Image (cartoon, rainbow, N blue to C red):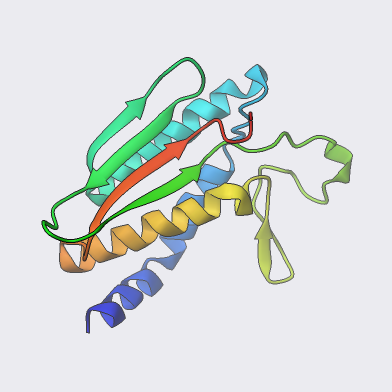
Length: 158
C-alpha cells in the first residue's frame, strides 16, 4: 500500500515539515521593495537546498534581470507523463503594519490555522507540493511520473 506508506511518512514527519515551512514563511520575501532583498535571498536559498536534499535533479538557479527563480526536475520515469509544478516565494508588503494582529512574518496559530504574510499565497501551497514529492521519494525511491518545478520570485511584481 504505497499511498498509505506515504501518508504515514507525512504524519511521522509532520513537525519537521511544519518547522521548515515556518522557516520559509519567516523570510520577508517582498520582491517589490529592495529593503527586503535579504529575505528574497534567504527564501531562494532555502528552496534550492530543499529541492537538492529531497532528491530533485538538475536543481538550478535561474538568474535574469530581476529576482531569482529556481528550476528542478525529476525525470526518471520514462514513458510516464510529465507535470509542471509552479509556485512563487515572493509576497506582498506587510504594510500597513498596524492592521496585523501578530507579526506579519511570524507564523501564528489563530483558531485552527496559521496566519502570516505569504502563508497561503504562495509559500504553503508550494511547500505542500515539495513535501508530497519528498514523501514519495523517501518511501519508494521514485515518483509515479516526471516532475518539473519552477519556483519564482516575481509573481507579486506584475
